[in-house]
Length: 342
Image 1 (tube, helix red, strand yellow):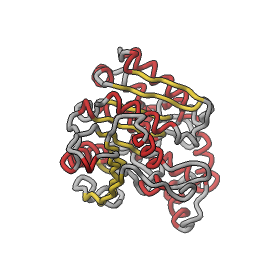
Image 2 (cartoon, one colour):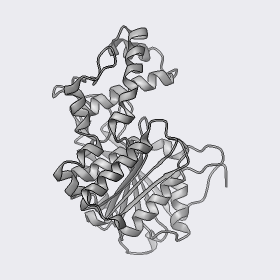
Image 3 (tube, rainbow, N blue to C red):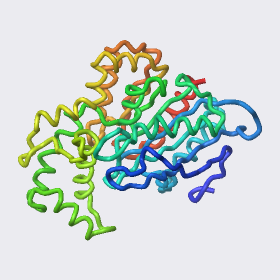
């Protein structure tokens, strides 16, 4: 009963997956990870096989947060269940994946700075789900979705592994890095200078003494370092920032970031081919997004059109809203994917 809980028509299973690929990762983060699987109504009473849709989280997100309940809003699993319970979409298995790190996230990429999170998803979790549940074990019946950093993962994972994922839905995903990341660099450089003598080591020392009392300013610094760990870490794990003490771009490091910008990736033939091969591409964002990810969404949509993705496979929408509070969009995209992955 709202606001406390809702009885599900389907059911959730949470288990712990022991990852060999994440074992001994550079940050010493757990290699045993929670995996949450939603099974639609009727799953237990039939021998039917279902499409699978994977959900990845935004920066600082972890699986337990999917159950957070705020006033007048239902958590994502309940919104999802209502979608399938009413028959508004054909049934699908939905898999919630964890790619958290001590920096707040991994962008679900393989990186010597964080670990093999991309391979963990594609080489471990997907085969395990197919072996454990009655999925239609084929890329044409498998999609991926997420918001913010999760939306970034949803964009780049099918570009890197079109053999694994055949559809995507991105909500305000990180894209057009010159717009969404670069404007932050001078402010981060100023904070490092004024509070930590320009040193991330001193920042981390300070944060370690303030457990449970981190500020938004701390999270902003942590986020940029986490992105750097994902995009521009050296083979030995050394994290290289893309800006100097003035907040100015360091061109050779920034180029490494841009090589993982979804908009820039799609301009390369192999990634354009991968995007063009997908059965469905959903792109949306709020018009008032504080990080200009509505512009990033528009740029990615244009890149998809230029790559030759047919209009009938594309859904693009800008709506009234900011970066937060758009949870109601999630089941819309899942339902749209489920219809196209049957």
